[in-house]
Image (tube, rainbow, N blue to C red; front, side, top):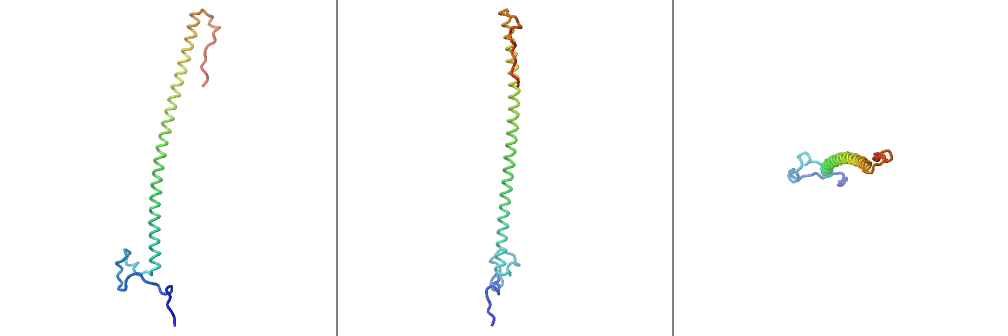
Length: 126
């Protein structure tokens, strides 16, 4: 006498009349053993989870690209401003140097000092 165990005789999904309307699965899935049906459901859930994680990762990539673009633009703008400030500073130093030279020339005229005894002003090297 051979006894049937739950593992040796698979339970079939679906009602006794063969109607599988209680699940949203296709009719092929209705006749799968219950363990295979559960595995299929698990695989589908894992697939949905992976798809969701992929969408989240793609959104993060887009966000990081946008942040990188914004930071790059800000860096380029800051470099341009720094360059303009350096040019302006050079112009100011040149102007100050010219003013000092004129002042020294005026002092020579007013004081009657020998122009060779006055040390000329030199702007510091940049």
